[in-house]
Amino acid sequence: MALTKITGQVVDTTTDLVVGVTTVGGGVSAVDGFFSGILTAVGNASFSGSVSVGGTLTYEDVTNIDAVGLVTARNGIVVGSGITLSKDGDGFFTGIVTATTFSGAFSGDGSALTGVANTDVIFPDKISLGDGTQTDGDQINVGLGSDLRIYHASDVSYIDVPQGGFSLRGTGNDNVLVYTSNSDVEIYHDGSKKFETSSSGVTITGTLAATAVTGDGSALTGVGVTVADGGDVSYSYESGGKNYMIHIFTSTGKNGVFRTNKDMTIDFLLVGGGGGTAAAEGSYGQSGAGGGGGIVEGSGFSLSAGSYVVEVGAGGAATNSTTVGGNGGDTTFASVTAKGGGGGGDYGSAGADGGCGGGGGDPNAAGGATNQSSQNGGISNITQFGFAGGQGGAYNTSPRGGGGGGGAGGAGGTATAAGDGGGGARGAGRANNITGTNVTYSIGGRGGRTGYEHGFPGEQNLGNGADGASATHPNEGFGAVGGAGIVVIRYEV
Image (spheres, rainbow, N blue to C red):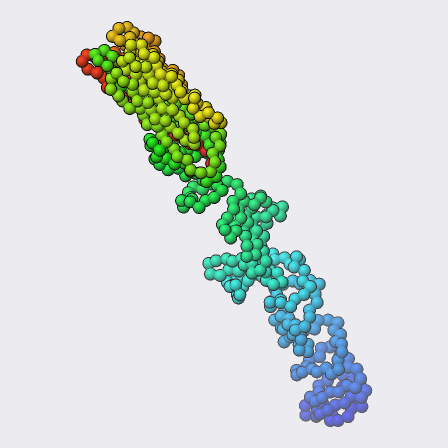
């Protein structure tokens, strides 16, 4: 190695090292150079091979490092107090980082990040969070004031809206659920509001279908709830795509009340009590039959809110011979009356007038007339039905028999028409399906026949007339009572 213009210590002959402070004023050209002290190069230093530094390499007043190849920093790089690049690949920055793209994991709360386009953040996999609370722990917060907060605590998942409203939308931006701050909640079906809460309860738009409803409904308003009492049977049924509520009153007398808390439209059926019959006279008499109760049918009948007394007519009484059986009781509701059926006459007595006339006794007594058509003048949306009783036959000679009672579907038959001893035929009843089942009401009784027979009672709550009695010396057949009437009220629900 050639050394020129060297000052300071020179070569140690024992180690062949240059020791001490060496100042090179010109240049150093050597295959190998070994320096144990400080080497100061006043000019430029150029190395064509590798430079190995066992200690610290310090650059004073260096403004640029120009590395053509790869720079390897085994223990990281520290730039001032703001940037640290660790040997593990982590970067720590206390100032502002400007980047056009970002890839990989991110740590920290990001509270001071700006200029981040949220719509461009894509998570290719799930976001996993631990448990949180309303004020702490893992949460998803949306809005500048954390106006929407999502978190999970224990076994419950929460969506909190600390301030403002909340709207859940579906296809086409249709509302599904809407919450107004400190106010109502609305639920929608295909964009149409069906359920809404308020401080006083809930409002449902449309039909509410329920398998059970609790409470007595005493405070319900505006829903047309109707309450009936006084020996009633109540039920509902469906017919023709409509649902109906039925109230049936069967207890005789003024023992029922129908109440409605709003104006409504109803259908109804009123049937008067059937007529009774007298005992057969003497040795060979036959008494006439009782007439069926008059029928009144209401359809689309307007009923104002209020309470209405319901009176069901009782069946007519059985009486002694040579009299007229008792008339059935009148059935009334909402100022509408169905007359009770006329009683059947015994020896020498005509049948009584009534909703349907009673049959005449022998010999050849006339049947009673119907008086149903003279009732309920000026009342709209009602139809009335009633027919006369039949004439009695001869006494102890052909044609014997009592006259048949009139029914609400036809007149009672005569003894003559029935033939000797047959008794006048029953007046036909009238069928009605207001209860959901087709039922025939107000059938007239059959006139007394020859032989010894007691009268047969009219069927209860159908308004049927009683059958007449007959005598064979010395036995007189007893008369019978008529069947009670009925009231049926129906409305759509």
